[in-house]
Image (cartoon, helix red, strand yellow):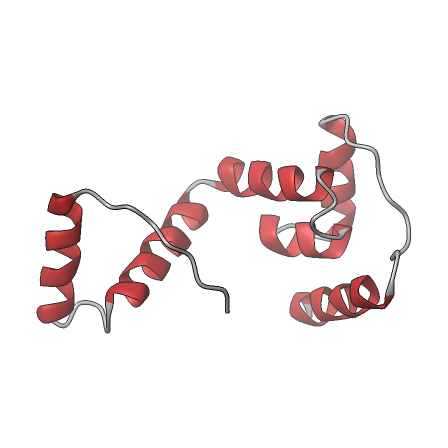
Length: 108
């Protein structure tokens, strides 16, 4: 799991800390994960846009893009074509192969 630093307004920080104290969340990280997860579950277009952007900049493979977008590989391929993104066929290195295998396992 990666670590990210964020600047959050004081009122939201207070609410987050209060929610942790009230037992709503285990800790601040749990609160942030929950909010992000919920946002992307409720905003499928944003989820797809993020996956398309990461694929377009060659940060992720087609399989990972499909997993992040919560669609199958064929739907992701069609989405990328609709967005005018050139498809990269086949993994470029061993790390990409492992990434594809993990993405395929997650789809089962």
